[in-house]
Amino acid sequence: ATEFVQVPNSNMRKVIARRLQESKQQVPHFYLTIEVEIDALLEARQQLNEHATAQSQGGKPPYKLSVNDMVIRATALALRDMPSCNVSWYDDAIIQYNNVDISVAVATVGGLITPIIRNADQKSLPQISAEMKDLAARARDNKLKPEEFQGGGFSISNLGMFGVKTFQAIINPPQACILAVGAGEEVVRVREGSVVAVNVMSLTLSVDHRAVDGALGAQYLQAMKRYIEQPVLMFV
Image 1 (cartoon, one colour):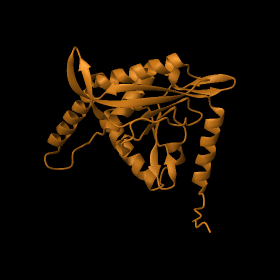
Image 2: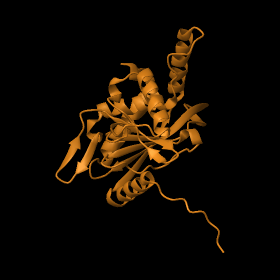
Image 3: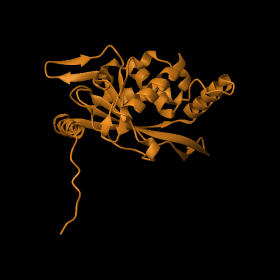
Image 4: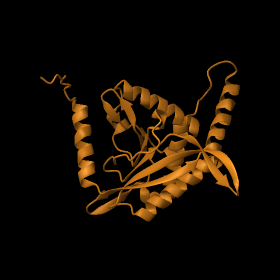
């Protein structure tokens, strides 16, 4: 006889399952992948974290930035540059959001939840970092208020910390886009006849074709690439 254990589905699991199924069945997804070089971003992160450590004078540093914090900031600034990607599809109109509210996927025991960094384009990297740590911790403890994870105009899912190089995320309706962030890795490139080692990361944008066309999605990824590869632009 087959032996098995029955794991009852929580209400949260049922809601997630229903929403994902509806999204995959009803939203015409297409996918765009771009590679970005992250050496300058890693260098900027190191300098900022060293600056925070120097400021702390033996106490706790005022902030410790992750690569994900910087990706959130870049995502928000690229959305500010490309408001036509900060949208939702409805049959009678496309809704374009005035606020840049980024939903960030966090894995919890009960399933995936997406706490929101509101007005992320207007927040500094230390602000985004502190808010994300707080939201993620409370998400895992099941202590988020509904308004902290319901809504948002655009989602990020980062599986880079698990070594996943590239993947395609399912859109979080009614949003039109979700960005899947892969792991950074060192690769060999040829530059003007010389072999150089560079760190690259793969970004895959899943797009609702009803609301955002291929060229628009590609322009959005170009904007992302600009901020990631020239992180000094994040401070302007």
